[in-house]
Image 1 (tube, rainbow, N blue to C red):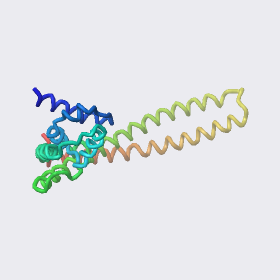
Image 2 (spheres, rainbow, N blue to C red; image 1 turned 90 degrees about the vertical axis):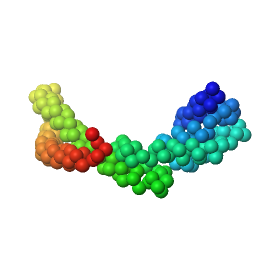
Image 3 (cartoon, helix red, strand yellow; image 1 turned 180 degrees about the horizontal axis):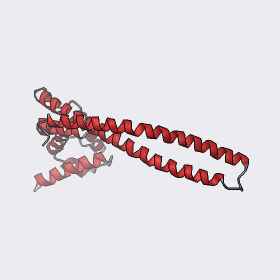
Image 4 (cartoon, rainbow, N blue to C red; image 1 turned 90 degrees about the horizontal axis):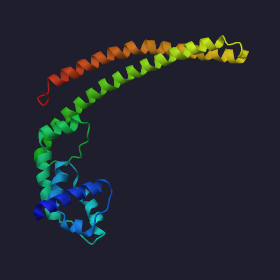
Length: 209
């Protein structure tokens, strides 16, 4: 029962430090530092994270058990540093802190770079599609504004200067509309190319089903 309680307190410490909260003296003393180390390792955190625990618990005169923490962290790193996990970390766009031991770093990093490449290709497709959609929304808004300006120019209550300004605004909006009209087909061509590159790359990956 005490082992389970200590483990839960250790996980509570992780959560508290993640939120920059303080820990009580009892929580610091009861923490299972091996569990904390394991969770840090399995999450790919660097070893200097233990400094945060020293600071949090040092206020109560409690020091982390570094031997237990390190033993747990090494065990967690063996879980984190699997190639498949490396791919998932890269695919999610997360950074890699170079925490894997030399014996595991090579395969992990190779898989990580594969995932990172997939992430970049997906991001390029998504960014281009989003730009196209944004331009279409802007084009629709310009149409409405141009029509509104044309209607206002007929308003007899407007001064000559106000009507002149509306004509200038309409001209600028029409020019922007022309830029968008030319830009969208270019982006659509790029999007098709980017999607093909993404599909081709995915087909080479053993990690992607």
